[in-house]
Length: 411
Image (cartoon, rainbow, N blue to C red):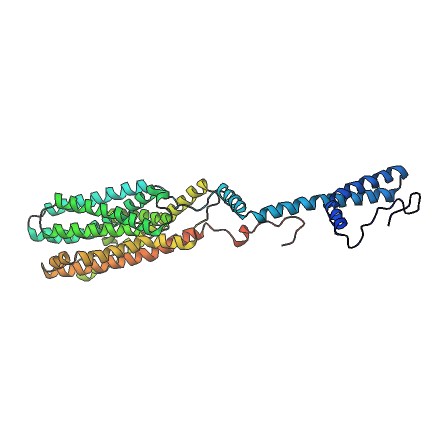
């Protein structure tokens, strides 16, 4: 209905006629345009009459106009995003590429090259000392006995050298290997194979050509390959701690040999066979106990060093849990037991040949084998316990790690 000019309803807007689609469409289309007009009209009324209620109405209309204007734009953006999924995927991929990748590569191994050099140097020293001892023997029977006595030292050194060299090689490959466990294992085993072949070639080239030489060469090569396979484990810092602790344990055992004679006297070794056996047992236990403590402390120290290096590279790097310290401390003992298995399987012919020389040699070989097994078990448990105790002393009270509550908030 059209308003008459001059009538009481002349100031009102024309209402759309119900059922008229053209009028409804025009009303919905121009809703955002009507709101600014209403805002301006309310503002003029407020300025003309200085009425507070009219000013409040103007503010209300202003808020409504902002909402009305903003709704069509938001709906348009939402429609464009929904209608074009490829553009949304591209935008999501771009935002993902911009974020820094965390944990995408293997953890670095501190001092891997230095460990490899030290382990290879220790293996060369063991091979040289064994060669000198065998060549100094006046008769072939004595050379066989000395070869059997020197075999455990060579096998242990080859096992640690293969692991250290493989660990250094995998660390140099870095992101080319990445987190692919199979490729990492194959690369580490291949590096251990190189050390094994080099060791066998050096033994056959420098030692006398006989049956014992071939046994030492083949068993040493097998030990280096097994050590390389051990280095293929995923937790590279833990393997590095095992290698460092095992190398330190081997050096300690050789250095401890100079203190055996004074300890024999300290533990009451006399002229009787019973006193000698009892003193030897206590000397062996003391050596194993101290070797386990050395292994645990070295494993903990290496992991602590690796932790500091990782924090410098990435402050958000996750900390190693207690199982890593447990494995690192027990690792040298495990390597000693693995070396004993290699000796008894690969070097069986040499041990049997040495035991057949005399009854005293048979007793000596049996006693030495039992002593090596006991030593490995002691180093395993004492090393693991020492590493855990050292790690536990670095932990604070449980409440120290809780964040402080923010003022004005409830926990």
